[in-house]
Image (cartoon, rainbow, N blue to C red; front, top):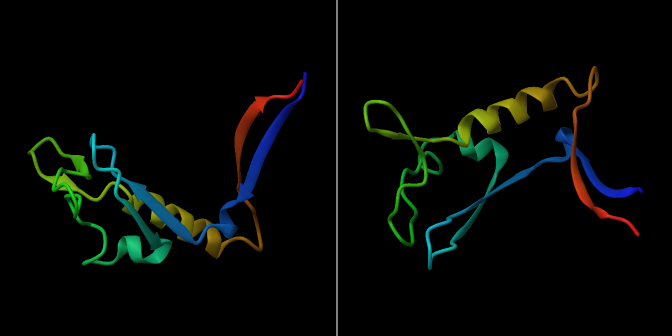
Length: 96
């Protein structure tokens, strides 16, 4: 059996989409990858619509930007794209 795959290079990523998973909310926030590291965009610690925490809790109880490490990794990999490419592969449904 073969499977359909969706693959994309990290160098192609430009937008991060954050979707609030609070029941009844579902707010979608789209930001350029670089803006996820800038103060004032993310790290917002609560959803602007439902005000529920959207960051990662630390042992001391504070909430931090969980997207920043991903954004930093994407930007770091994009800097070296002439030497190495990283491709992310999402498996699809089984093909008949």
